[in-house]
Image 1 (cartoon, one colour):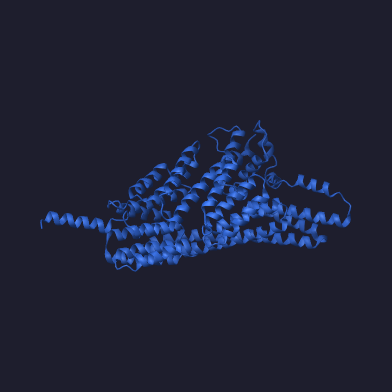
Image 2 (tube, rainbow, N blue to C red; image 1 turned 180 degrees about the horizontal axis):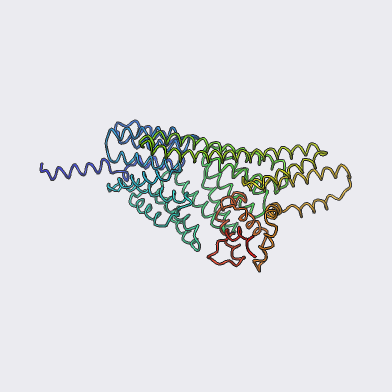
Length: 567
């Protein structure tokens, strides 16, 4: 056989044996199961088709995706995640195969992304990308890496994703001909344009492309997942425009496509419908849908952050309906969920730190170890300080709530307890722990005071005018008052100067936003307090900037926080 022909045969074999993620149906199936949140099925498929294989390269891929399974399912997954990656690494060292090592690098890329260790994430990202680019049929895995890249940019406040980042991922996905990957990236591009001014039509076009392509997906669960994202994102577009009927129409269509097993979609859609009704001041209907969402949130697939959002929406609905006992009950649920999530994050970060030193740092010199250790020590101290601050703040809140309940059972001590709580609130104002918790606490204290005074008046005078009393309470009961008082004590002329800046009368919502900005809250914190989407916060702040007649070059947040310096 001629040597040239032999060379061609060997070369073609290497391509088909190692450069084959585009044609690897088993790998595509695992990713499809993950996308449809079919995690148990994915684990069984990995074990039967990869880990039990005699092919070492298949075992490497199996352990890489098993590590991702642990990341998705385990509460404190760091140890198992890392141990599984180490197994893949040992096999790759035995095979000494370049693609096996690239898959290991891919695994560590996802691992460091989950730890938010961006320097190591970038290192392994480009290392794996550069290897996979050498092979012609690795477009599928390259699309996953570039999707990871632009999503990491979305998470990093210091970086901004560009449309080029999305189009590179889309280009590789189209070359791989994987329908789910293409449709999912269309959806992500739609989300990208949805955050840009005057780009809503473009966002809708990409959402529609995603939906049309999803019709070709054979896996029913993955298909429903793509449909869920379409209806949810389309509804959010109209919700941001205050077109509530159209938003509800899309959310309800999403509900019709879901099955009882789709707990993640049902939880999110019912919560979105409830929130839409809340914006329409239909609090009874909002509460009904929030309660349905809470039922689905008990599934393990739902994150603790989503549960906190649902509990917050429920207690706000109860408060608007003046069902104060239920309000306190769900406020306590919210607090407990926040404490549990803070503890989980602290434990995970501590475990991540330990795992980090057991892997990457063991290869460093002693001097480099000391420098890195000092950096991580400061990081850990910061986490501990933040956790302690949160525990102290939550302790004050719990103490405050307990005092309010004691007031209800002991009317003779009510005024004394009220003065004590007001003093505690005054002390807490000078600290910067959690202003949103403070505002809510002040609101509930006013409600409790109203109930106690109402009972006391019933005792003293059975014939007093209840309607006039309730009418006075409604005048007092404005959620803006609490925020107004907080800012007024810090800078008495704040609202006066604010109103002098505009010829258009500011609404209560405008003043509330100005107060939150003055209190140094960012968009995420304001969105969390008001239970709105961060995009809604951005739109409202833009309108406030127009009312204040500020030029494009002036930053609204900086202007309001420096308002005390304006003459």
